[in-house]
Image (cartoon, rainbow, N blue to C red; front, side, top):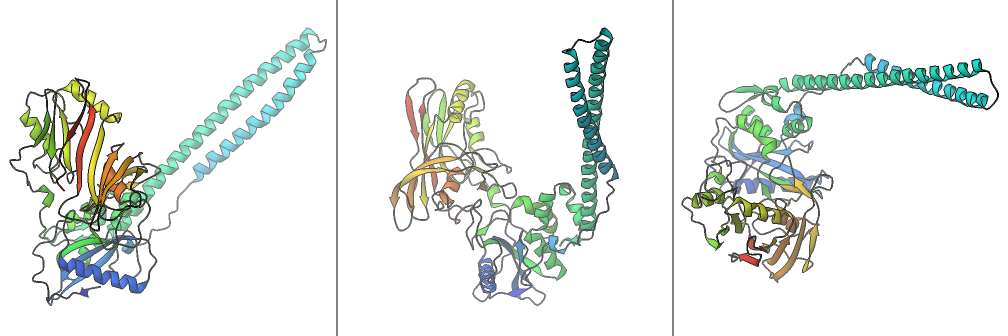
Length: 505
């Protein structure tokens, strides 16, 4: 499983492991990827497309090579390290007592049969009573028929109540069964996970049961974590005394219609699937700091493109956060708040991705904020974005319309989802087409996260990623997407205005 690499043309191995959730691949990772792709091509496997995790390692003799693992999709191939999920002991057969469930079902069926049989008999007696009353009958007979009708009514009510109790009892039995099944499944997972102990570089030991206790009741999440490739590579390296030097993950194979992936392209490790195990396994290793937590805008002064008594708009540079993130670095919102300490209300009206540049609009009082925010919600503010795309576009203008939602196991990536997605609509027009790029104007009707990036890259959209898009295309110096203008009715004057920021590319 250790595969050698040629290092004569590479000056030095990495001094630290790259930050797993945002990185540029080292040349050794690129070389390892190419070897994996050659192996898979020779194997001619027909497995679904998936991510492949790589780890550059040094063995005890000082040789540099790599190990690889599949992420989520198991391939029975000795070339790859098996995931934890593949190596877990098989689940044991569960002997569950369900006599109470069967008894409750039998009781419900019996109660229903008794009720239905009585309804038929009571109906026949009702017809007979109706016929008798059309004839001349004695007072005593009339009283008897009335008593019979009342008795049938009382009996019917009693049988309906009996049937309802049987239904309730069966529902409670099902609820008990589901609870017992969940408890049995939990114990089953605990037994299986407890058999697998991990040791990190710092010498600490934990079982999978201890590490994954917060996911034990979410089987989908648990399986997604256990099928990740990188933690399995770290465990393999620890067991075989291989020193990790770097890591990365790339896409191989075809992509589903929901996702946007490019074969051979490197991607950040999906944090939701990796962080629990990776936080433990990486203890004792030297990992680079998060490059997104470095403040490149200390002392930044906004470039104001429009201002009056009730609102202000700035030209946000690419790479600057619109709102505060997890790291305490410069962001537009807090900067504007500091500039206008007497402003009332939340001020911020909309956001731009960190990678996107362009017009950001703020309100100076809560009344104007409410009016403009409603205008955004009701799609009364026309937005124009300029983007450079990687490839030519088939149609020079048109509309992209398909539902989108967040991929919960791979934030912040979005995906097409016709079951749970929200409608996303974008009009577009090609402005320029050259051998190197296609310049496009986007006019988003809705405002979904990453809407333009997904509509540009997806094959059901324009089929051409925005240049520099590390999530849906190829990473570059910047994302070539710029919010050029906002056109709307001024909340005070009633005049139609357009606020613009010149496109920097």
